[in-house]
Length: 191
Image (tube, rainbow, N blue to C red; front, side, top):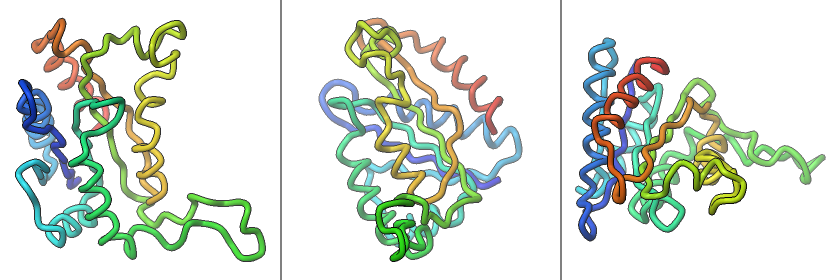
């Protein structure tokens, strides 16, 4: 399998995107150990759109690795999506899925990348209870509920989701060894 790892860590403030890059390194090592071919892009370092289009189209799976910033992905990740997936759209999307005889139904079902998979791996300063407890900030929506728009962008292209991964409390209560151990197990189980 050919796996594209997209490092959406951003050098900003005190973090420098180091945890995202560390997790990308872990995924790279685990995937190569299983015999997979790995392609990588560190988005914050810049990229060539045509090169990225080739990577996206050639990959069997994509790992989106990024920190949760203001309840979403960093702007550089959104910019990457806007530039690269738009440039690749003719190969990823046949249409929006609707038909002239029923324009009210079927939106989002025109993706062509039905043999590709993706995984979202995010890091958050919020504790896991903020995601899973109905009385806390994200109202029990879980990580996938908070990253819903990224999931829908991938589904629009036809990709199928692999289980998501999340690191919590990364600033106030970091547990780097635990994140590494859990991520290794997650990669081994899902690839």
